Length: 274
Image 1 (cartoon, rainbow, N blue to C red):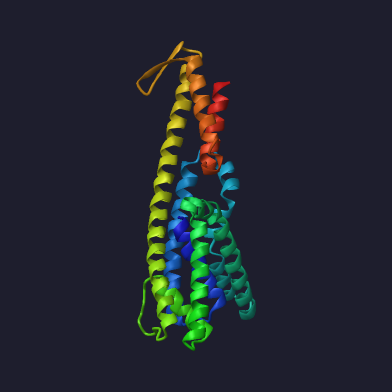
Image 2 (tube, one colour):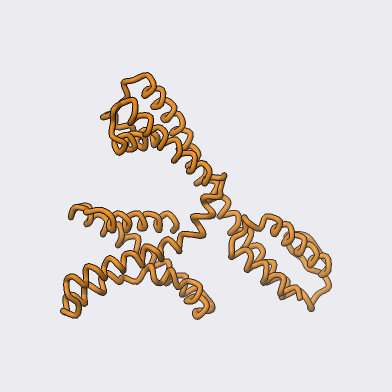
């Protein structure tokens, strides 16, 4: 969902800042509709599964705002002559900004978590610096405009390499060589970070499910039996409590790596021990 949100955010930014052709706008609208449909299905599926609907609405208000088709609603108003053309244009831009802010807010937590994986935020920072320095060098030694040099640097760094522009000077060739090598390393870093991020996310999900399972087991076992049998091990009630508390303390030592769901689950487990 985070990746889809980023795609929509980029599309909205391009629509707000550039004068796009009809064909490109049509493609963007199709992509937007497909992603919007996925968001709607995801939202109402989670709403249906949630036990506390009121709490779900409060917690996922941003998600709700991001799926409301405000632009389509105002187009209907225009068709009914409720709003004038100029107002529809202004309102449509405002609704796009609102939706963009909602989507950015929606992805903020996941994007922040992703950027921290493998210290990827530092990798991005270094990559931007390398591209900018290379563009500056190419602009100076190859008599290129800064815009064209920046475009060439990005294309070369991402290993696309159209070949329509290439350096002639020795310094330009050296810069291109360094940029290509660094670009290959960057692509490898992106792949590695994506793999690590999704693996960690799956591991956290399984751990959270295990904690929930143990929490339910505690509620059933405490007060009814002197022993608890779990994970093929027999514990006394007191020992089992101690083991769970130790496990939670151990997890809390890596607090920054914990998701909100894991923290909420731990709170529920601790409350069940009382």
